[in-house]
Length: 146
Ligand SMILES: Cc1cc2nc3c(=O)[nH]c(=O)nc-3n(C[C@H](O)[C@H](O)[C@H](O)COP(=O)(O)O)c2cc1C
Image (cartoon, rainbow, N blue to C red):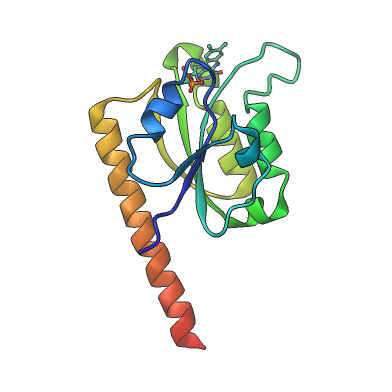
């Protein structure tokens, strides 16, 4: 079965990368130019931190995530969004993930704080395994209908 890849952004503090590398599936860091400029070859999941900038727009979406989502292919094949944040940011908690989900009409699949706990990792693995399964079934049903 295809493992739905996770495309994530992680800053030099690397909290999201620590989490993403524990998911036991392809995970691509959008901080790397080659990944940022690539196109997904099928359904994929976004994992993004929120970064409150303090400027007027208060855009918390990392620039690398904006760049990746500029591709129409990537926007079309996105199936869900996950977020890492910090509750200390109050109403801006998980703002980037929630905003992208709302704008794209895709669900927020999972949220956690900082690098997540071992329980967060286990729960997220299960959510993604269920997603793999659902996507495989949907693809199968489509083939059968033809
Ligand atoms: C300058 C700064 C701004 C942040 N702004 C937010 C925010 O608006 N909302 C939020 O939920 N978390 C916020 N965070 C927390 C980060 O999203 C969180 O620590 C995340 O795990 C960082 O991932 P990374 O280390 O992989 O970049 C902020 C952290 C920093 C350092």
